[in-house]
Length: 176
Image 1 (tube, rainbow, N blue to C red):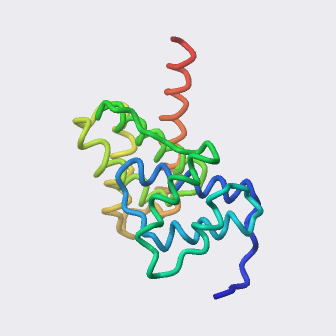
Image 2: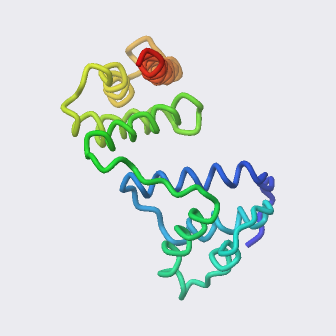
């Protein structure tokens, strides 16, 4: 079905493929239909990869082939992402990935802080570094109009907390 949406640029398509690669690497379920659509988007954006047309052209009956073909496309494009083998290091990598999406606006702050709380902070034992993001999650989840603060302000606080988390990581990396 053709829709009147703006066509993706090649860079946008590569970002989408990379994003989906990380989602899958961090254990999130991504349906075959979404993998095929990402392939189609990339093909239409003139991204070149030997297996891309095969992925984009899969029929519904061929959907079980999509994950392997998607990985093949990622490999061909140099986008394959493998999280750290150590479970704690993988959770920290996921934390930075989620924070990056909150900070750049590609992930809704309420959704992102919920993921940070449920999928990262809990598994890491609620470390100090994630406290401000976890607090933002609780505030966004429990928000009521009577608080005298808008949801938009709470969202801005979550974006700021994500940015600060990333800045602290950069500062720590520069100091080592």
